[in-house]
Length: 273
Ligand code: IPD
Image (tube, rainbow, N blue to C red; front, side, top):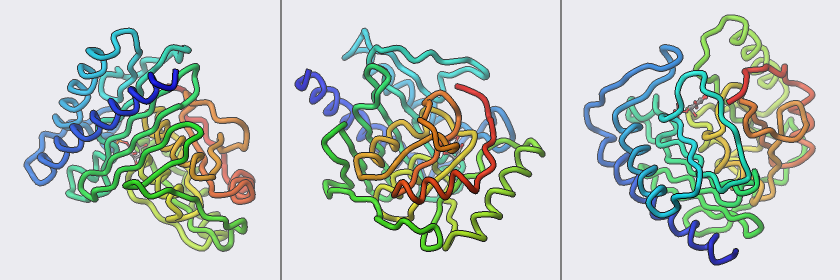
């Protein structure tokens, strides 16, 4: 019901605020860093602490809801999305930025019901930017309504992208081919080190598109709703419907820019969550 959604939204905001406080406190301190799938895939004690804290807050309030979190996902574990309300979180998106004192870091929380994202909250506590969205109700940055750019011509578009953490030679070759063709056809390229914030940046008109092959459901669920509620489109990079468990995403300010990107990109299959 509306009331339940309102209640979940308020809980999401509260959780994001607390997660943001932990990120802010730890930001300039010494960090204990571990690697996961590759030497470029990092996790810190703070990622794990936030995820534990958030999970316990949610379980306490909503014992029947499901939870998918980056740090409680084991290597190669596969997720099943059900129709149950599911809280999908990334405790720190941009962990490499976090350990390098680069302020482009955020907490990301998306809530899906019937496999549809109904709430998205992305909070970047160092920059004090809070992105929020509810399905059908628009998206906001610190309370200001967001509207994606209206640009349709790729030649006038700035495209955000992320290289990701895979160091597989063939995958990197395809990714290099993609950046090469976009440097050729777009106005500019940017890479900020956080997939979640990159999608939010497209929602905020800070660039016209974003794509990544190899990110995860927790990197783009919240941002995806924030972008579509700002008038942007979120698709599978091939141009088809997005599958939230297929590890790739394309976001563009307009259908036209999405189409141009789809045509140019080599569509890399990075597997499933
Ligand atoms: C990563 C960041 C990075 C993207 C990776 C993500 P994490 O998230 O969003 O920009 O390229 O694919 O996994 O590990 O910092 O939470």
